[in-house]
Image 1 (tube, rainbow, N blue to C red):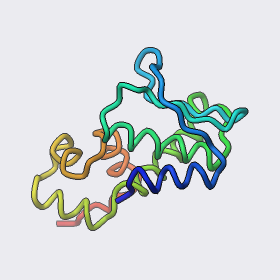
Image 2: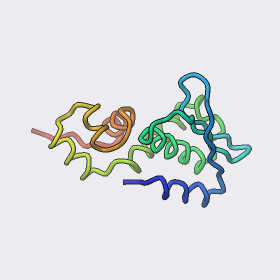
Image 3: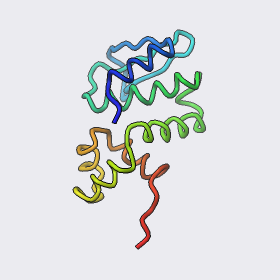
Image 4: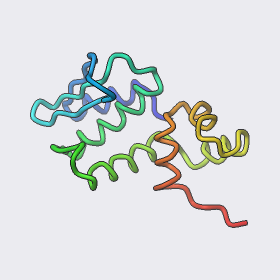
Length: 129
């Protein structure tokens, strides 16, 4: 599982500055390519901050300039973020322990419900019964 220190190391490797401030509305984070800057909402809980930083770093890695507007960029970014934050082994173990409830799985894996849903949509292999 990714930790904050490895994400901040990744930001440094990419030459991206990470700042926290109050963002408007329901925006959790934003990558601004022209300044190589990631903004995170200062009100995020730790698991939200982790997921948002990972997500915005994927945008930074690909130098996305219209991250909220282009569905192809956003789909790619969500898939990669889920793959970085959840391993198949951890997901299967959590599901065996807690069932398929999204909230319980997100708590067990330390990610947001959105990341759980993205993992299921993009990465998980259905179990054939």
